[in-house]
Length: 388
Image 1 (cartoon, rainbow, N blue to C red):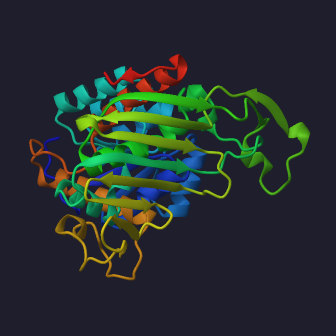
Image 2 (cartoon, rainbow, N blue to C red; image 1 turned 180 degrees about the vertical axis):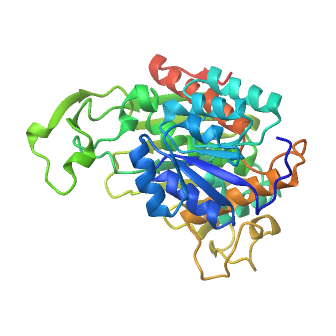
Protein backbone atom coordinates (compact mmCIF):
# COMPACT_ATOMS: atom_id res chain seq x y z
CA UNK A 1 0.00 0.00 0.00
CA UNK A 2 1.46 3.32 -1.04
CA UNK A 3 -1.22 5.78 -0.05
CA UNK A 4 -0.97 7.59 3.27
CA UNK A 5 -3.80 6.48 5.52
CA UNK A 6 -5.48 8.66 8.11
CA UNK A 7 -8.40 8.03 10.44
CA UNK A 8 -10.55 10.07 8.07
CA UNK A 9 -9.57 8.16 4.92
CA UNK A 10 -8.98 4.57 6.01
CA UNK A 11 -11.75 2.24 4.87
CA UNK A 12 -12.78 -1.18 6.18
CA UNK A 13 -14.73 -4.07 4.71
CA UNK A 14 -16.24 -6.66 7.07
CA UNK A 15 -17.01 -10.23 5.98
CA UNK A 16 -19.63 -11.95 8.13
CA UNK A 17 -23.19 -11.04 9.11
CA UNK A 18 -23.68 -13.37 12.11
CA UNK A 19 -23.07 -12.58 15.78
CA UNK A 20 -19.40 -11.57 15.54
CA UNK A 21 -19.44 -9.54 12.31
CA UNK A 22 -21.64 -6.78 13.80
CA UNK A 23 -19.49 -6.87 16.97
CA UNK A 24 -16.50 -5.98 14.76
CA UNK A 25 -18.53 -3.17 13.17
CA UNK A 26 -19.45 -1.71 16.56
CA UNK A 27 -15.85 -1.88 17.81
CA UNK A 28 -14.61 -0.13 14.67
CA UNK A 29 -17.20 2.63 14.84
CA UNK A 30 -16.41 3.32 18.49
CA UNK A 31 -12.88 4.08 17.31
CA UNK A 32 -14.09 6.41 14.57
CA UNK A 33 -13.09 4.01 11.78
CA UNK A 34 -15.15 4.03 8.57
CA UNK A 35 -16.91 0.76 7.81
CA UNK A 36 -17.44 1.00 4.06
CA UNK A 37 -19.08 -2.30 3.30
CA UNK A 38 -20.31 -5.68 4.48
CA UNK A 39 -20.17 -9.12 2.87
CA UNK A 40 -22.42 -12.04 3.83
CA UNK A 41 -22.90 -15.63 2.73
CA UNK A 42 -25.32 -14.27 0.11
CA UNK A 43 -25.80 -10.87 -1.49
CA UNK A 44 -29.28 -10.74 0.01
CA UNK A 45 -27.96 -11.27 3.56
CA UNK A 46 -25.30 -8.63 3.01
CA UNK A 47 -27.84 -6.08 1.79
CA UNK A 48 -30.23 -6.79 4.65
CA UNK A 49 -27.58 -6.53 7.39
CA UNK A 50 -25.88 -3.52 5.76
CA UNK A 51 -29.19 -1.67 5.75
CA UNK A 52 -29.83 -2.66 9.36
CA UNK A 53 -26.39 -1.41 10.46
CA UNK A 54 -26.41 1.66 8.18
CA UNK A 55 -23.36 0.48 6.24
CA UNK A 56 -23.22 2.12 2.77
CA UNK A 57 -22.09 -0.85 0.67
CA UNK A 58 -23.12 -4.51 0.46
CA UNK A 59 -20.75 -6.83 -1.37
CA UNK A 60 -22.03 -9.96 -3.08
CA UNK A 61 -18.65 -11.69 -2.83
CA UNK A 62 -15.21 -11.42 -1.27
CA UNK A 63 -13.81 -10.69 -4.72
CA UNK A 64 -16.06 -7.63 -4.99
CA UNK A 65 -14.94 -6.41 -1.56
CA UNK A 66 -11.25 -6.89 -2.38
CA UNK A 67 -11.67 -5.07 -5.70
CA UNK A 68 -12.94 -1.95 -3.91
CA UNK A 69 -9.95 0.47 -3.92
CA UNK A 70 -11.32 2.30 -0.87
CA UNK A 71 -11.10 -0.83 1.31
CA UNK A 72 -7.72 -0.82 3.07
CA UNK A 73 -8.45 -3.36 5.82
CA UNK A 74 -10.55 -6.53 5.76
CA UNK A 75 -12.14 -8.02 8.89
CA UNK A 76 -12.98 -11.73 8.59
CA UNK A 77 -15.83 -12.97 10.79
CA UNK A 78 -16.77 -15.89 8.56
CA UNK A 79 -17.03 -19.65 9.31
CA UNK A 80 -13.69 -21.25 10.19
CA UNK A 81 -13.08 -23.06 6.90
CA UNK A 82 -13.07 -19.72 5.04
CA UNK A 83 -10.47 -17.99 7.22
CA UNK A 84 -7.39 -19.25 5.37
CA UNK A 85 -8.60 -18.73 1.78
CA UNK A 86 -10.16 -15.36 2.60
CA UNK A 87 -7.13 -14.09 4.54
CA UNK A 88 -4.79 -15.27 1.77
CA UNK A 89 -6.86 -13.56 -0.91
CA UNK A 90 -6.98 -10.33 1.11
CA UNK A 91 -3.21 -10.30 1.64
CA UNK A 92 -2.60 -10.97 -2.06
CA UNK A 93 -4.92 -8.04 -2.82
CA UNK A 94 -2.75 -5.79 -0.61
CA UNK A 95 -5.21 -5.44 2.28
CA UNK A 96 -4.40 -5.48 5.98
CA UNK A 97 -6.31 -8.31 7.70
CA UNK A 98 -8.04 -8.80 11.06
CA UNK A 99 -9.20 -12.42 11.30
CA UNK A 100 -11.37 -14.29 13.77
CA UNK A 101 -9.90 -17.37 15.40
CA UNK A 102 -8.97 -20.00 14.49
CA UNK A 103 -6.67 -18.45 11.90
CA UNK A 104 -6.90 -21.56 9.70
CA UNK A 105 -7.92 -25.21 9.68
CA UNK A 106 -4.33 -26.53 9.95
CA UNK A 107 -0.97 -25.25 11.15
CA UNK A 108 0.36 -25.62 7.60
CA UNK A 109 -2.27 -23.12 6.44
CA UNK A 110 -1.59 -20.72 9.33
CA UNK A 111 2.17 -20.90 8.67
CA UNK A 112 1.51 -19.91 5.06
CA UNK A 113 -0.46 -16.85 6.22
CA UNK A 114 2.30 -15.78 8.64
CA UNK A 115 4.87 -15.96 5.84
CA UNK A 116 2.65 -14.21 3.27
CA UNK A 117 1.81 -11.33 5.62
CA UNK A 118 5.51 -10.85 6.33
CA UNK A 119 6.40 -10.90 2.63
CA UNK A 120 3.66 -8.40 1.80
CA UNK A 121 4.54 -6.22 4.84
CA UNK A 122 0.86 -6.03 5.77
CA UNK A 123 -0.62 -5.64 9.24
CA UNK A 124 -2.27 -8.80 10.53
CA UNK A 125 -4.24 -9.52 13.68
CA UNK A 126 -6.20 -12.40 15.20
CA UNK A 127 -9.27 -11.46 17.22
CA UNK A 128 -8.19 -12.72 20.65
CA UNK A 129 -10.22 -9.93 22.17
CA UNK A 130 -10.36 -11.45 25.68
CA UNK A 131 -6.83 -10.12 26.22
CA UNK A 132 -8.25 -6.62 26.18
CA UNK A 133 -10.20 -6.67 29.44
CA UNK A 134 -8.57 -4.18 31.84
CA UNK A 135 -8.13 -6.86 34.50
CA UNK A 136 -6.34 -9.15 32.01
CA UNK A 137 -3.70 -6.43 31.69
CA UNK A 138 -3.72 -5.98 35.47
CA UNK A 139 -3.08 -9.71 35.88
CA UNK A 140 -0.25 -9.55 33.34
CA UNK A 141 1.44 -6.68 35.14
CA UNK A 142 1.09 -8.43 38.52
CA UNK A 143 2.52 -11.73 37.24
CA UNK A 144 5.37 -10.21 35.28
CA UNK A 145 6.39 -7.78 38.05
CA UNK A 146 6.82 -10.73 40.43
CA UNK A 147 3.92 -9.83 42.69
CA UNK A 148 2.73 -13.47 42.65
CA UNK A 149 6.26 -14.86 43.03
CA UNK A 150 7.26 -17.91 41.05
CA UNK A 151 4.30 -19.36 39.15
CA UNK A 152 3.36 -22.90 40.23
CA UNK A 153 -0.05 -23.69 38.75
CA UNK A 154 -2.39 -22.29 36.07
CA UNK A 155 -5.86 -23.80 36.21
CA UNK A 156 -9.31 -22.98 34.94
CA UNK A 157 -12.13 -23.62 32.54
CA UNK A 158 -14.21 -22.21 29.72
CA UNK A 159 -17.81 -23.36 30.08
CA UNK A 160 -20.95 -22.72 27.99
CA UNK A 161 -24.37 -24.39 27.71
CA UNK A 162 -25.52 -23.40 24.22
CA UNK A 163 -25.02 -26.94 22.86
CA UNK A 164 -26.51 -28.71 25.89
CA UNK A 165 -29.49 -30.25 24.09
CA UNK A 166 -29.32 -32.79 21.26
CA UNK A 167 -31.52 -30.43 19.21
CA UNK A 168 -29.05 -27.52 19.59
CA UNK A 169 -27.44 -26.94 16.20
CA UNK A 170 -24.80 -24.68 14.65
CA UNK A 171 -22.40 -24.86 11.71
CA UNK A 172 -19.53 -25.33 14.18
CA UNK A 173 -20.75 -28.91 14.68
CA UNK A 174 -19.82 -29.78 11.10
CA UNK A 175 -16.07 -30.54 10.78
CA UNK A 176 -15.90 -29.40 7.15
CA UNK A 177 -17.07 -25.93 8.28
CA UNK A 178 -15.74 -25.58 11.82
CA UNK A 179 -12.81 -27.97 11.89
CA UNK A 180 -12.19 -31.31 13.60
CA UNK A 181 -11.58 -29.58 16.94
CA UNK A 182 -14.71 -27.82 18.20
CA UNK A 183 -14.98 -26.85 21.88
CA UNK A 184 -11.22 -26.53 22.30
CA UNK A 185 -10.74 -24.68 19.00
CA UNK A 186 -13.76 -22.42 19.48
CA UNK A 187 -13.44 -21.34 23.11
CA UNK A 188 -10.54 -23.23 24.67
CA UNK A 189 -8.17 -21.36 22.35
CA UNK A 190 -9.23 -18.07 23.99
CA UNK A 191 -8.24 -19.44 27.44
CA UNK A 192 -4.94 -20.77 26.15
CA UNK A 193 -4.09 -17.48 24.45
CA UNK A 194 -5.10 -15.43 27.50
CA UNK A 195 -2.92 -17.39 29.94
CA UNK A 196 0.10 -17.16 27.65
CA UNK A 197 -0.54 -13.41 27.27
CA UNK A 198 -0.73 -12.94 31.06
CA UNK A 199 2.27 -15.07 32.02
CA UNK A 200 4.45 -15.02 28.91
CA UNK A 201 4.74 -18.82 29.25
CA UNK A 202 4.18 -21.27 26.42
CA UNK A 203 3.01 -24.86 26.64
CA UNK A 204 5.66 -27.54 26.11
CA UNK A 205 3.48 -30.68 26.15
CA UNK A 206 -0.16 -31.69 26.65
CA UNK A 207 -2.33 -34.64 27.66
CA UNK A 208 -5.98 -34.33 26.62
CA UNK A 209 -9.19 -36.23 27.29
CA UNK A 210 -12.29 -35.62 25.12
CA UNK A 211 -15.93 -36.64 25.38
CA UNK A 212 -18.83 -36.29 22.94
CA UNK A 213 -21.97 -36.59 25.05
CA UNK A 214 -24.29 -36.33 22.03
CA UNK A 215 -22.80 -38.71 19.42
CA UNK A 216 -25.94 -38.09 17.34
CA UNK A 217 -27.64 -34.69 17.20
CA UNK A 218 -30.85 -33.48 15.59
CA UNK A 219 -30.03 -31.19 12.68
CA UNK A 220 -32.81 -29.00 11.24
CA UNK A 221 -33.67 -30.27 7.77
CA UNK A 222 -33.91 -26.70 6.40
CA UNK A 223 -32.07 -23.44 7.18
CA UNK A 224 -33.05 -22.18 10.64
CA UNK A 225 -34.43 -18.96 9.11
CA UNK A 226 -37.12 -21.10 7.50
CA UNK A 227 -38.45 -22.03 10.94
CA UNK A 228 -38.46 -18.52 12.39
CA UNK A 229 -41.58 -17.91 14.42
CA UNK A 230 -42.77 -21.53 14.68
CA UNK A 231 -42.02 -24.60 16.75
CA UNK A 232 -39.99 -27.37 15.13
CA UNK A 233 -41.57 -30.83 15.00
CA UNK A 234 -39.70 -34.20 14.95
CA UNK A 235 -40.19 -34.28 11.18
CA UNK A 236 -38.16 -31.07 10.87
CA UNK A 237 -34.95 -32.81 12.06
CA UNK A 238 -32.54 -35.33 10.63
CA UNK A 239 -30.10 -37.43 12.67
CA UNK A 240 -26.53 -36.19 12.31
CA UNK A 241 -23.55 -38.15 13.72
CA UNK A 242 -21.14 -35.93 15.69
CA UNK A 243 -17.39 -36.48 15.70
CA UNK A 244 -16.22 -33.33 17.52
CA UNK A 245 -15.86 -32.91 21.28
CA UNK A 246 -18.53 -31.48 23.60
CA UNK A 247 -16.02 -31.54 26.47
CA UNK A 248 -12.27 -31.64 27.05
CA UNK A 249 -9.88 -31.64 29.96
CA UNK A 250 -6.26 -30.83 29.14
CA UNK A 251 -3.20 -31.28 31.35
CA UNK A 252 -0.35 -28.96 30.36
CA UNK A 253 3.33 -28.65 31.15
CA UNK A 254 4.39 -25.06 30.61
CA UNK A 255 7.89 -23.59 30.49
CA UNK A 256 9.78 -23.20 33.80
CA UNK A 257 8.16 -26.30 35.30
CA UNK A 258 4.72 -24.66 35.59
CA UNK A 259 1.78 -27.08 35.48
CA UNK A 260 -1.69 -26.32 34.14
CA UNK A 261 -5.11 -27.85 33.68
CA UNK A 262 -8.02 -26.60 31.55
CA UNK A 263 -11.59 -27.89 31.27
CA UNK A 264 -13.64 -26.85 28.24
CA UNK A 265 -17.34 -27.58 27.78
CA UNK A 266 -20.24 -26.44 25.63
CA UNK A 267 -22.77 -28.59 27.54
CA UNK A 268 -22.54 -27.13 31.09
CA UNK A 269 -26.05 -26.08 32.06
CA UNK A 270 -26.28 -22.53 33.39
CA UNK A 271 -22.82 -21.47 32.25
CA UNK A 272 -23.51 -18.98 29.49
CA UNK A 273 -19.97 -17.86 28.65
CA UNK A 274 -17.73 -18.42 31.65
CA UNK A 275 -13.98 -18.23 31.12
CA UNK A 276 -12.34 -18.75 34.52
CA UNK A 277 -8.67 -18.91 35.46
CA UNK A 278 -6.67 -19.08 38.67
CA UNK A 279 -2.91 -18.57 38.79
CA UNK A 280 -1.13 -19.81 41.91
CA UNK A 281 2.32 -18.44 42.71
CA UNK A 282 4.84 -18.78 45.55
CA UNK A 283 3.66 -15.48 47.09
CA UNK A 284 0.03 -14.93 46.03
CA UNK A 285 -2.76 -16.13 43.72
CA UNK A 286 -5.19 -14.39 41.39
CA UNK A 287 -8.47 -15.53 39.87
CA UNK A 288 -10.87 -14.01 37.32
CA UNK A 289 -14.20 -14.95 35.75
CA UNK A 290 -15.41 -13.45 32.45
CA UNK A 291 -19.03 -13.39 33.62
CA UNK A 292 -17.90 -10.95 36.35
CA UNK A 293 -15.17 -9.19 34.36
CA UNK A 294 -14.76 -6.16 36.59
CA UNK A 295 -13.63 -8.14 39.65
CA UNK A 296 -10.36 -9.94 40.38
CA UNK A 297 -9.76 -12.16 43.41
CA UNK A 298 -6.32 -11.89 44.99
CA UNK A 299 -5.40 -14.68 47.42
CA UNK A 300 -2.83 -14.52 50.23
CA UNK A 301 -1.42 -16.94 52.80
CA UNK A 302 -0.68 -14.57 55.68
CA UNK A 303 -3.15 -11.71 55.23
CA UNK A 304 -6.81 -11.30 54.23
CA UNK A 305 -7.75 -12.05 50.64
CA UNK A 306 -8.85 -9.17 48.40
CA UNK A 307 -11.38 -8.39 45.68
CA UNK A 308 -9.97 -5.79 43.29
CA UNK A 309 -12.69 -3.86 41.46
CA UNK A 310 -11.83 -2.41 38.06
CA UNK A 311 -10.98 1.22 38.78
CA UNK A 312 -8.29 3.02 36.77
CA UNK A 313 -7.08 4.80 39.90
CA UNK A 314 -6.26 1.39 41.46
CA UNK A 315 -4.82 -0.37 38.42
CA UNK A 316 -1.30 -0.63 37.06
CA UNK A 317 -0.29 1.79 34.28
CA UNK A 318 -0.47 -1.10 31.76
CA UNK A 319 -4.09 -1.86 32.73
CA UNK A 320 -5.06 1.81 32.89
CA UNK A 321 -4.31 2.19 29.17
CA UNK A 322 -7.15 -0.20 28.24
CA UNK A 323 -9.64 1.24 30.76
CA UNK A 324 -12.07 3.84 29.44
CA UNK A 325 -14.45 4.42 32.35
CA UNK A 326 -14.01 5.31 36.03
CA UNK A 327 -14.51 2.90 38.91
CA UNK A 328 -18.05 1.58 39.32
CA UNK A 329 -18.73 1.95 35.58
CA UNK A 330 -18.45 -1.57 34.25
CA UNK A 331 -16.66 -2.51 31.05
CA UNK A 332 -17.46 -5.75 29.27
CA UNK A 333 -17.31 -7.85 26.12
CA UNK A 334 -18.02 -5.10 23.53
CA UNK A 335 -15.32 -2.93 25.09
CA UNK A 336 -12.68 -5.58 24.35
CA UNK A 337 -13.32 -5.19 20.61
CA UNK A 338 -13.02 -1.42 20.93
CA UNK A 339 -9.72 -1.67 22.81
CA UNK A 340 -8.25 -4.27 20.42
CA UNK A 341 -9.09 -2.27 17.31
CA UNK A 342 -7.74 0.91 18.88
CA UNK A 343 -4.34 -0.80 19.02
CA UNK A 344 -4.57 -2.36 15.56
CA UNK A 345 -5.55 0.90 13.85
CA UNK A 346 -3.09 3.05 15.79
CA UNK A 347 -0.42 0.66 14.51
CA UNK A 348 -1.68 0.78 10.91
CA UNK A 349 -1.92 4.58 10.89
CA UNK A 350 1.53 5.01 12.48
CA UNK A 351 2.95 3.14 9.49
CA UNK A 352 6.04 1.69 11.23
CA UNK A 353 5.48 -2.01 10.55
CA UNK A 354 8.96 -2.95 11.83
CA UNK A 355 7.79 -2.11 15.34
CA UNK A 356 6.58 -5.07 17.44
CA UNK A 357 2.74 -5.06 17.48
CA UNK A 358 1.00 -4.69 20.86
CA UNK A 359 -1.88 -6.93 19.79
CA UNK A 360 -2.30 -10.62 18.82
CA UNK A 361 -1.00 -11.31 15.31
CA UNK A 362 -1.03 -14.18 12.83
CA UNK A 363 2.02 -15.57 14.67
CA UNK A 364 -0.14 -15.94 17.78
CA UNK A 365 -2.84 -17.58 15.66
CA UNK A 366 -0.26 -19.99 14.22
CA UNK A 367 1.00 -20.93 17.70
CA UNK A 368 -2.59 -21.67 18.75
CA UNK A 369 -3.01 -23.91 15.70
CA UNK A 370 0.12 -25.87 16.66
CA UNK A 371 -1.11 -26.15 20.24
CA UNK A 372 -4.60 -27.26 19.23
CA UNK A 373 -3.24 -29.89 16.85
CA UNK A 374 -1.13 -31.33 19.68
CA UNK A 375 -4.19 -31.38 21.97
CA UNK A 376 -6.27 -33.17 19.34
CA UNK A 377 -3.51 -35.69 18.70
CA UNK A 378 -3.12 -36.34 22.43
CA UNK A 379 -6.83 -37.04 22.85
CA UNK A 380 -6.76 -39.40 19.88
CA UNK A 381 -3.62 -41.29 20.93
CA UNK A 382 -4.14 -40.99 24.72
CA UNK A 383 -0.59 -39.89 25.47
CA UNK A 384 1.52 -36.83 26.20
CA UNK A 385 2.31 -34.86 23.03
CA UNK A 386 4.99 -32.20 22.74
CA UNK A 387 4.22 -28.91 20.96
CA UNK A 388 6.10 -28.73 17.68
